[in-house]
Length: 199
Length: 370
Image (cartoon, rainbow over all chains, first blue to last red):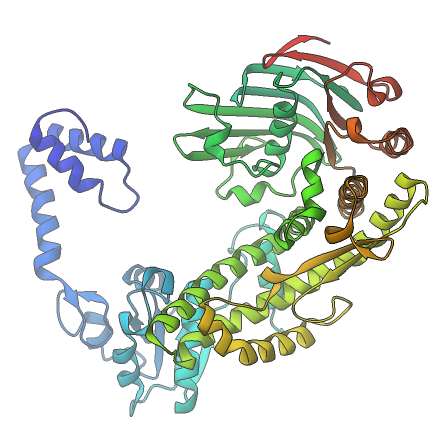
């Protein structure tokens, strides 16, 4: 790591462990913290610690939350018959931003990936299955990522849900809205064609 | 399509080289180690962002430098293009027409390229993987969807193999741990085989004809796609998927014993025979050489038909090992190609004499005269 005062080095070494942060960026961020006012720096440090101290996983949907159950699970106006399965908390934020989904969520906290040692036991699958049994859930929307691991996870869950007689749907894949067809890459376009719908 | 200029910085032994090319035929002349092949490699790299010799990016950086940078300009039917590639500290950056590509694979197919070198005899001498790679690169250049399927298939295969490996160690596997991977392996695999089938249906007759043309009809070549699922001819995706699924069930025990996936397109082959005898086992050096040229010409022809224009064709020291008749036949075939790049050590070689080409004299990685 960088040459410099030990405290600066220590901060840079902490930052470099974050995803998407390389050595250079970590050094730049550490120097930026040096230039911050003490109040700003304290606020940053407290915010980091707060995340660890105050948040946990919701005992129902396994999303990150400060209250248990989380605000979405506790919200009675939500459609209890509709459940959307996602990989990460960030996916819930993205779907919530649409304002279109009125059901509840289940966060798996990952996707199947034997190469990374992630099997069903490492995901929040048990929690998911116990939610389904004896519930009023009528449809499960599988919204895992459209890659090999997300697809495998969706297939795995589909097999588990089928015997329960609950309807399972998979989110569609296709063209970003507002873009032109001739700008879409062939792969996305081909998938959009595969998933075309009758109008 | 054609390349009009190339800039190579710290690429192999090319410290700083700028060349402007002839629209049709370009002949690079120089002693061994002068950098001719490196110019061809740079051209190929700019088209598919990979070395034709399978070298790793880091190996392409000039000794003592910490990066390489390539720039190419050219024309294709859709208009002029500009492509750049930079590798620094293990990071690769590729730009096309001023846009930095988010995924390197997006470059494949923009500028089609075919490379032919003496090394290519390993296409018929080497293990099946060589021939699969040949076919995959050809089909990827005409279909980016194929390339994506191939990448997804490889990823699925790795994941599935890990499940099998764990199963071998722990002495068993639950069906539901394999199923999600099986499903994807089967659907992607079947589609890959369908694409390979149809590519081979086009490529094989052309390569066979070209082999005949090269050898003046002295012997004949056979070329057959030999997949591990299906019979290699016109089977539908559904038929293939069903057979694939059955085979996975039947080989499951063996797969767990070995800890790897034993059926699927990752085990396909192309069988090459000359005079009715398997070339890999019985072929002479001359037959291997002619077969390699025929395969590459067949590849070029496939790209030409699908893209609607000629791919850039690079040939590294191909003529020196050919007898006079074959060399003459190859010159005739190449004359109809839009743009070719050839490297040779001798200025009195047959290609230097018979092809009217712009010549570039290279010495120690630098351009001496044109």
